[in-house]
Length: 204
Image (cartoon, rainbow, N blue to C red; front, side, top):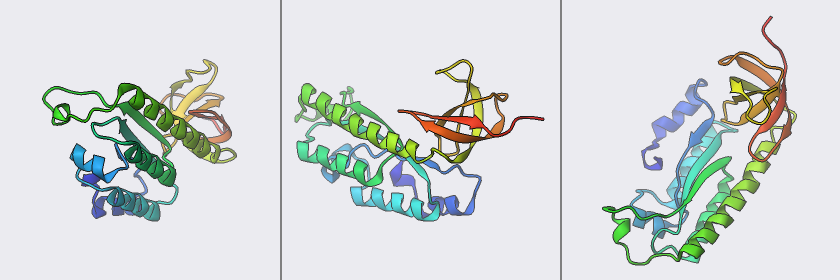
């Protein structure tokens, strides 16, 4: 939770190289008005300050996030504030959802409901922007050698292996190593959601 990410925890990303350079930091909305209504406990500015602080102590760190669109009372201007934060941070990936009411919650009692069709359109716009940013972030890895934790057979091609980088990027590569092995992979291409590469060495 962004509210719980304190200065000491941020410093650990500088002091401990064993910490993976990836943080999932759920924003939910870029509008201070909506964040207050959600009871998130932080402002847009405070959130961005934590992003900046992490980037200063760990250059190249990757970020993922969560978003909710169509929260009761969310206006078009509020939604645009969310898009503006996305453009500023350029998250590597995110999970996004349209608001759904849950009985017993404070939000369920709020009267200013957002039209479902409008909420669906906002979700489409947000996901379209995120897809563009994800492609951009993946493309920066082409030509680099990355460390990959092998997880298993690739879902896209049974003849390939699949794993994750320290930044939580999925890499499909050839040839193959055993699950749980850590390998160096040259990234040769980038897709919509994952990377493609070639293993640089195998077990002797």
